[in-house]
Length: 343
Image 1 (tube, rainbow, N blue to C red):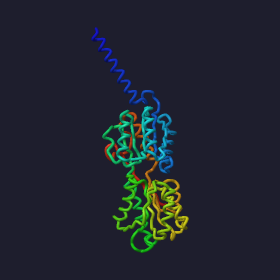
Image 2 (cartoon, one colour):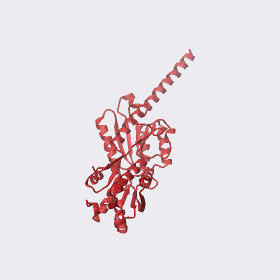
Image 3 (cartoon, one colour):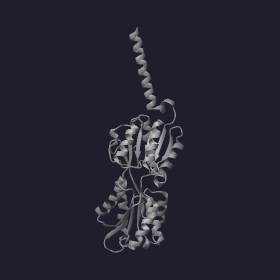
Image 4 (cartoon, helix red, strand yellow):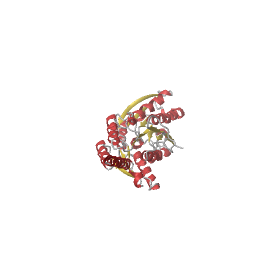
């Protein structure tokens, strides 16, 4: 009798434990409420990131019974982002979408470990992750930028201009493209790849290049404007192209050039400027002929990927179920870039 009683108690404890763990792991399905998703962005002031945020907000408006997003601004400060992640973990958030401020290996590993200890699904996005984070947990996923492709397409824009309008671009007729490079953050994988592949694309297709100067402007428009203003005084008409790791810096460069009467519509006083992101202001400048072109990873496509894959992780489904995405490595998909030039 005592043995039966003990067995009954043991079975009851096991059942309660299983039920508790089920509720803890996936409270959404238990109570029938939309998943609570914490979206941690490196900087709300980033023009491209603001477009991704807007796209996610639109998804929530269209699917109010399926998802609830809460947005957190790291203000380009990893310490702030770490604190936000800690708070959300303590509150048993259902899903974390993280656009990291700092993408070094230690930061990535630390965040993955903190999140997976609580069995919370995690998607890292808009970054080139330098390690293989998915060995830790099947509930961690990466929606990465294909930054080398972005650089290649920037090179393609300039290559096309060089091949079709070389006489206007090669001002000193030395058969070389003299350029200024505006870089994002130092040691940032995306910035490095965009820089490297833009130039290698030109060189590999027979265009010799010469870097007049490069500046690290941390993706910032004002820094680029100040830098080009100063560099124009030094190099003036010898500048034959400006290559920028993003559109914000490209726009700052154009603002500086316009102060000297350049890039206002006169083909004889236009320096080709290329960027990345296809933000609305850049699109407008391209359509006016003030900017040569940009490349984009569509923010709507990124937001939809985060939404679709994120819900699959929340409900313990295969990450790519009912999507058209293909893996680019274990637990990683890379979204492509597209060229935008004047139509």
